[in-house]
Image (cartoon, rainbow, N blue to C red; front, side):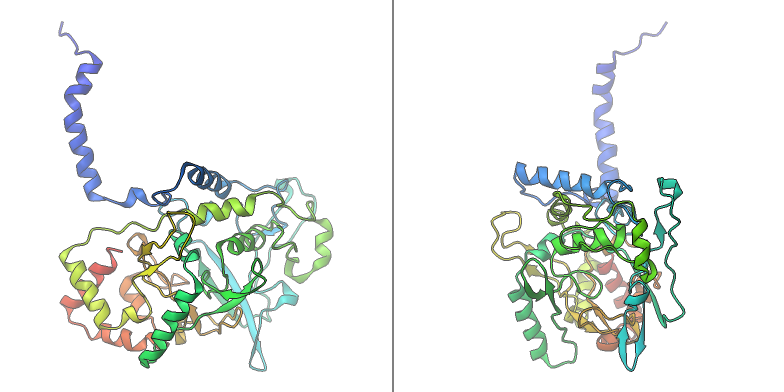
Length: 398
């Protein structure tokens, strides 16, 4: 009878081969597994806050925690999970509005610009039958928006407005018609207007405000910054049946969500090949970098992981007139033609593109650009096949 090797000896003999195989596997996807990690250099205390925030981000909301009566998601992670927690997804929300005498009307009387398409129900132990919101006949503008990745946004949050204002002045000085504009919005915590950096219209100034906004508008969870429930389809009488009136989130939940996003690392860069390097030169030559600015730096910060850190979002976070690519929705002073420059970091793991996922390829996304990006789009379509391939190799490395 053949003797079997002891388990420990067998492991020792196989370990080199297994390790080599693992190295080969990692070489195929060298950085993908690092999406969703915390910023490097966090102290143990801040790392603990990141982990606690992640748990809150993944928490399944219930009627007892204040969910509803209308909502779009039961957890933040439901919409922000690809390719790791804190990422984006193809989950869509619907925005509506109309135009009256040349002015945008968000149809607040009918429930507002954002539709909530799910309700608490008998399944949740609620007796009242709340109706989901649908676009009313009065809505002449109906558009979809995808959930965006949150990776690296703590770096953006930690970049002072003065940096962006200076960048906007530099763009204006070029005089080439591609300058973006800073979107000044109400900052509740500061009690004044500051630069909007987040959302498709750059309509939110800070991650803290972004978190409170998402709690109430996507999950129906009221909180100190956003204490008012949304009236279902504008019918505020329906709120008398709300099983959890008043403030739903009075603890550290908003701050915990902010901590997770603030300390979430930027998307790791993919393999930088010779074609990718050459493709970046093409990217710059046709003017894509006029709006998709490669490099920014955070300001002074007591947290070393956020203190004067250079990062590469490939966005200026400004509003730009995108012509026909605009979604028709106005938020703050952002017009229906304006959209915030989408950051390109992490682009390589996306499979559909643009705010409404209309583009199924990078080429489709580029050729859909309009307005201030039209000249760059036309230069792209005029590229040789070789240069176009190099440009795409660069984009697929981000």
